[in-house]
Structure formats: C-alpha cells, structure tokens
Amino acid sequence: MKVPIFIITLRLPAVNKAAHSDRLRKRVLVGLTLLGCLFVFRPLFAELTEFQRLSQQSAGYVRQGDWNRARPLLDKQAELQPYNENVLFHLSLALMYQRTENADEYRQGLLRARTLLEKCVEMHTNVDPDSVALSRRWFYLGLVQRYLGQPRQALHAFRKSFAVDPTFRAALYNEYILQLESGHLREAESIQARYNRLFVRPGTPAQ
Image 1: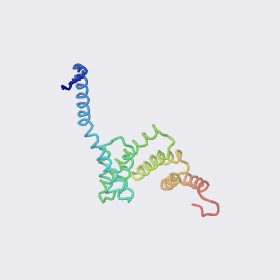
Image 2 (image 1 turned 180 degrees about the vertical axis):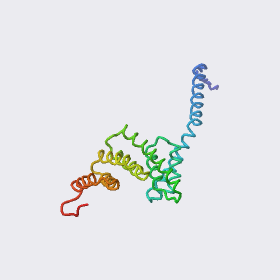
Image 3 (image 1 turned 45 degrees about the vertical axis):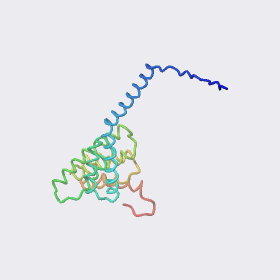
Image 4 (image 1 turned 60 degrees about the vertical axis):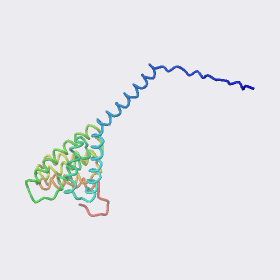
C-alpha cells in the first residue's frame, strides 16, 4: 500500500529589495552620524571630566584656606571655562590671599583680582542685581581696591555692597575704617552711629 505524500508549499513574500536597501542605507547613515558625534564631542566630554576633577581638588583647598594650592587649579579651570563666574570669583580670592614674599608678584595678583572682580560684578548685575552674591563681589572688590591704595574706589564698592545687602555689616564697618584712615572723622562718626543703631543690641558695648 502506498502512503500518499503531501507536499506543502509555503509561499514566502517577495523581498522588496528597494525597501530593504533603503533601510540598510538609513542604518548605515545613523551609525556614521553617531560615530561622527563621538569624534566631535569626545574632546568636550574629556574637557568636562578634567574640569570636574580640577573643581573637586580646588574646592578642597578653598575649604582649607590653602589659596596657594588652589590658585593653579583655579587658573586651569578658568582656561577651560573663561565665563564661569564662580571660578573667576574664587580665583580672585586666591590672588588676594596668596602667600608670597615678592611684593611685585603680590601687586600683580591684586591687579588681576581687581579685573576679575569687576567682571564678576558686571555678570551679577546683568543677571541678578539684588543678590547677596553681588553684594559680596562688591565687597571683595572694595578690599582689593583698598589694598591697592585706592580709597575712593573702595568706598564706592563698600557702599554698593551694603546697598545691595543692608544686613552685611562688614561692608559698613570697612567704610567706617576707610573714613577713619582718610581723616574724615565726621563721616566716620556718622557711620559708627549708624552701625551701632543697626547692629549693636541694647546693653552691649558700642563699637
């Protein structure tokens, strides 16, 4: 007895060569685009990684008050991100508080710190003119100008600092000291009375 043999023929759909070729071409283009982006942005990623490394190191030295070690790291950060206001501000502090026995080097550092702080003041004025941060930038600019022997400019900076933040007693106190040093006793007495009225509690010795 013969067993019938059934042959089942499956009809496969025809391959659309044009569509397949188009999909393949798109995948190749996407791959090449991603590869190109990798080469383009790889230096940027490396730069960000380097900046983060420098930022962590410098922040540690800043917390310790070791400005001499923080300064070269902040310098490198400023090279990588020249418009990073926070970096410029801390670099200016490092230049102010660096320890050096070379008077000319110290003065050059103060001059550079003044330029950086002027830039920081401008940045904050344009973005947030009422911020406490702007008050502090004005204050340190006043300190630098005082160290450079520019009392009139320093007075202006201290007044701007206090105007932005009327709770910042250091700005008013430094204005008082400058008036005393300049021999303006009447102005100094007026500031002293204002300082005591604002910041000295009743029953405590007046400044």
